[in-house]
Image 1 (cartoon, rainbow, N blue to C red):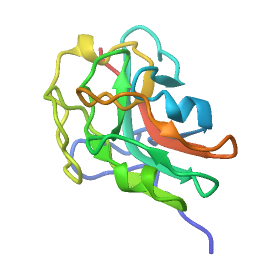
Image 2: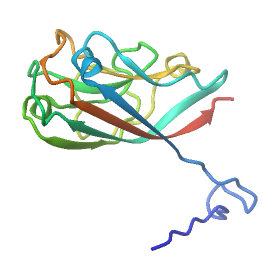
Image 3: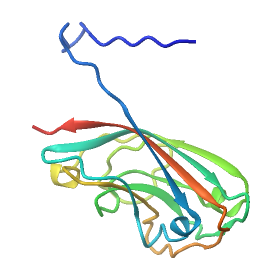
Length: 172
């Protein structure tokens, strides 16, 4: 089945000459070693977008294959996207059940900016932060919940495929 896309929107604030929005896709596969160290060593998934630009992540999909060996993880473990090294820059999604139960898992989430801290699973928050917290900063994946140490266990065959669907926005 094909898909059709409307590129010119004439309603609201858009005119007939509006450009289409281009949604970009970035898949990254993390190794077992990278997964083990997510609490202390964030993994960059997108480089800095450039001066006066920022990323807006529309959706993320995580495919965790730990069927070869489960991890031992803190009950507060949660996966999070970071703008640069700013903890709490996006909502966190708890994933201790997926880490500690061997299987193949899919986790989908809409990540939006959040200047607070804590775990906001299944909550969509609006972007309300200073430009300095998003402008020209790379996107990283981590588990930055306070007090969470590196995971143990796992298996060399385990992987985590992270796919981000995002747009680059101009800030000026």
